[in-house]
Image (cartoon, rainbow over all chains, first blue to last red):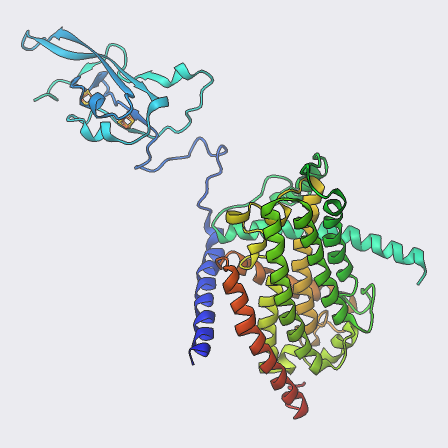
Length: 158
Length: 331
Ligand code: SF4
Ligand code: SF4
């Protein structure tokens, strides 16, 4: 008897599958899930969790949150991050203090694993949404993330 | 009919159906896109209408490459086998009462015979390419076609019991009192389902596309073909799909007859009804393709020999009983 139940089960499951795809077919008018890139380059928004590149956000006073602790440099499995640091005078206390000179990021080495972002104690770096990373010269992929003359935001170290 | 007339008609058919085949490819691509919530080709011409034309032009202008150790003669012959048989079969399809190039008295038989010649082209192509993927693909195609040919033939035979004629124009004539799928009710519906399954397998389309299973065999029997020769195989697949749908339309759904005879006074509208019915069936086959996963070879053979064939044989007996006891539904 399993012969006939096999046939009915087979037909039933096939119809279930066709119902699912049929629903998608009828709903396809409401808009495709694919993007019309590069036509919509202006309005194309990536998802929040998209991992495009590592960036360091700066606020309006040209201040970032990086203390130069180098945890990200150690965490990175590929040696993507190089922190060139310096000692400067802290205005508030007048003591000598570590600060970053250049936060060098080699995009061409990065695997977007996110370890650097996870490990940063002050959340100074995060994911950027840019995905158009093609260049004619690979030196263009080596970036300095802290902007010139930027300094650390007061209070992040407390 | 003079020979010149025949050649002219052949050329007209060739022209119409190569273009129609190209549009079928476009339809498939758009429908596939809609099933997957994509957009599909929409750049060349209005809504991408000229996309496949452009593709065909590109393929024509490409260099024809082949393998060093290929059997050149058979290798070049194979695509023609496939495309010519597909086009030949179109000759007997009744698009309207008058738009039928070749109305022979063994119509259905001719169609079945012609459609199995196509597989010789596939076998030749696979063998002559001297490539293991092509050879495996061709052998699978042989297994598949030999098995499913039976079901196609038997399911059509079931309907022949009802029409008592092999001639396609006669078969349409019988359906003036109701389409055969209504006249033959239960056995006809079973025969239709079997025919659609076996027909899909005949055309080597998914879910029966082990012949060219991309993930295992590259492109199967046409791995080594390029340019126009590849285009022939591709076009033949789509013309064959159209053919299977056209045969189903003719035998089950009354060919060019309009539903309930609503446009009986305007005979040329038959083309419209025929194409409408055929395209609905073609759409059904596309729906199959974009829904069902590919079968394994053993599952394919189980389906045919353990399920379709016995069902078919029982179905013929039921149909014979229905015809004998005159249980036909007629209007
Ligand atoms: S995402 Fe991973 S690879 Fe890239 S810089 Fe951070 S730690 Fe290194
Ligand atoms: S980015 Fe974060 S982890 Fe890296 S040096 Fe600056 S503060 Fe430390």
